[in-house]
Image (cartoon, rainbow, N blue to C red; front, top):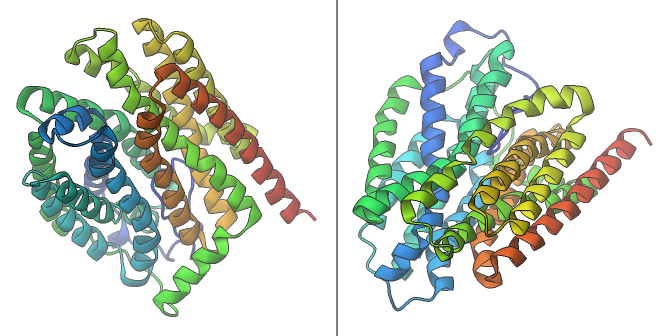
Length: 413
C-alpha cells in the first residue's frame, strides 16, 4: 500500500487504502482540526528563530552572529531534516499514533528546557532535540490522514494540513516577534511549549491507530528502499531544485528584519510587514487544480519563476516599504505553489516506495532551511542576497524541467 509521508503537500494523494474502508477508521472533523492546529504549532518551532536572533544574541553578548544563528536556527533545522529519514520508516513499521505521541511529548519537554539554557552551546543541543522530536509529527500525521480519511475527502484534508505547514512560516515569525517584543524571547518557548502540552492529551484521546495491512519484513528494508530512491538521476535533479525553496524563504526573512531596522522601521511595524505575505500561503490550495490543467512540473516551474520575480522586485525596491510588501507577497505565492508541486513529484518518482520518497523530500527541503540563516549572515548585503537567491531559483526551475524530462523518458523509452 502506498503511503503519504512528507512535510507539505496539497495534492499528493497516496495510492491504495485499506479495503473495505470501515466507519471506525474515519478521522472525524475534530481529529483533522486537531492535527492541523498541532502541525501549525510544531512547524512554528522552526520559524520562530528568525525574529529572535537579535534578542538571543544580546542576552549571550559574547557570541558572534554566526554562533547565535547556528544555535537557534541551524541546529533545529538540521535535526529536523535528518529526523524525516528516521521517523517516516519507523512509523511505517510500528504505527502512527505512538510515534506522534512520543514526538509531541519530547518536543514539549525540550521546548520548556530552552528557557533554562545557560549558554548557547546548551541552547544548540536543546534546539537540536526539538528539531528531531518535531520531525516525528509532519510525515506521520500525513500518513495517518492518508489511511484514515475516505478518498473523496483526502485531497481536501491533506490540503488543509499543507496550508498549516506553509502558514507556520509566517505565523511563527509574527508570534515570536510579538511575544518577544512584549515579554522577552524566553516567553516564546513558554507559550508555545504550553500549547504543545495541551495537544498531547487531546491526541491521546482523539486519535486512533488506523487499520493497516500487516507489515512485511524488518525496519531495514524501509531504509534500503529510501537509499535506492535517492540515487535516481531524476530524483537527484529534483533535489537540486528542492533544496532552494526553503533556503530562499528562510534567508530572505532572516535578512528582512535587520534591513527594515536599518530603514528606521520600529519593531511593531516590522511584525506587520512580515504578516503581509501570509495570504500568499493559501496559494498552495491552487496547486492541485492548476496541475489538472497543465501538469505538476509546469506548476512547480511557475512557482519558481514567481518566487524569483518577487525577490528580484524586492531587490530593486529594497528602500521602499510598499515595494518590499508587494514583492514579498509575490515571492510567497511562488513558494506556496512550488512546495506542494515539488512534493507531489517526489511521491510520483518514488512509486512503489512512496513513503521513502516523501521522507527524502522532507530531508532535502529542510536541509535548505538550515542553510538559509547562515547564507543570510554570510552575504550581509540585502540586495545582493536577494539577487543571488533569485538566480538560484531560476536555475532550480531548469532542474525541475530536467527531472520531468528524465522521468518522462524513463516511462516512455
